[in-house]
Amino acid sequence: MLDRKFIVENAALVKENCARRNSKADIDRFVELEMQRRQMQQQVDELNRQANETSKLIGKAKTPEEREALKTQGRELRDQCTAAGEKLTALEGDIDAVQRTIPNMSHPQAPIGGDDQANLEVKKGKHAPPKFDFKPLDHVELGEKLNLIDFEAGAKTTGHGFYFLKNDAVLLELALQQYAIHLLMGEGFTPTITPDLARNEVLHGTGYIPRGPETQIYSIAESDLSLVATAEITLGGYLADTIQEEDVFPIKMCGISHCYRTEAGAGGRASRGLYRVHQFTKVEMFAFTLPDQSDAMLEYFCDLECRIFDGLGIAYRVVDTATGDLGGPAYRKYDLEAWMPGRGNGGEYGEVTSTSNCTDYQARRLGIRYRKKGEKGTHFAHTLNGTAVALSRAIIAVLENYQQADGTIVVPEVLRKYMGKDRIG
RNA sequence: GGAGAGGUGGCUGAGUGGUCGAAAGCGCCGGUUUGCUAAACCGGUGUACGGGUCACACCGUACCAUGGGUUCAAAUCCCAUCCUCUCCGCCA
Image (cartoon, rainbow, N blue to C red):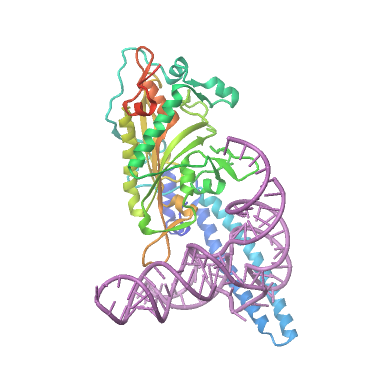
């Protein structure tokens, strides 16, 4: 979330930003509520002060009569204070509700536009899309022919959008994980395997909203836990409510988790096969940085994502995400779209990874702060997240790009040592 | 799952109703002393919000796991929840 003081002092800028980001957040209402809250806070403080003063006098009262009179006065003051405090709490609740709908500010260079049509292609990968001298199949057909993916069984046991990976697809998934993790460890990331569930508070902190009408999140009944939609949630929560020393940054972590998404409202969108599923595995990168490090870290994350797909020998393009398509927490976001020969009519790019600089938007709610040497007070860290490999979509890209005329799949060079074979089928 | 113990500042750990934002020690920062380092000694050292200042200083309020309650007054008493530790059971 944004800083309350910042919103009040820069209401015009925040409004303008909301317009660019398709956000209907009511800034005027926020400012009005916030002014009321400040006033009420002062009132509560003042009443508290008087009540405290009175309490101290009771200890020093000389006569029982004086004592009783002071007690009565104290009781009245506390009652007033409680009443004012209740109003204050109510105001804070209202403010929070509005505040959390206000998106992050946007990078000045992020393309301005209402949706993904306005995304700006900024680069292409090293490899060109493959040319086939046969009609390429899509991953669903390939998965079925080679007995790699079983959607029917997934639907039977769990429901639409679930699947079993089988046989060499299992090795492929594990190989992709290993490939990504080894690469990231070589870059100084601390690898983790995170919990797949998180407290709702942590979800909120990272900008995810469980139990809303359009939530993407599965909640666990009778608890304050939800299944995570990405390890970004748990990794972001890792340093929640801590104050770090300035010199620990940047902190680079990565985490493997399962990711669960309800995909509410996604009906009708391109969603055949593994592309849009309710559960997949992902290797996620995450960084905590100082404010002046986050721009460079975003470029670095993007570069790593490119290296991972260049290494796999898969064609892709990178787009700079338009303001209207940024979501809540991101200040700037790059998506990497890999070439998927089985998609659309004769192949299309499909999003496989995404990296965002969330500046202090998540850190503020999560309470991730740092202290500068020789300075009073604290500052909020910046957080960034990026997909190293989303396994479901990476598997689509590998299967479709590496299919051969004889129906087999060649295993990308970099995965062979992890798979122990160079061909599927 | 059962029984017990406990959650206090960066850490260890006192504190059982007002004089407590909280002793003491450690750590950390500054200083004195000193060939250097160490030791010793002196001083300082939480966070947030608001007021105040050019900026400091300073003032107010809140915070001793979390949420309620009792009381004029709660770290301290009561209730609930969460978490940690030990033992037993169970289990991968």
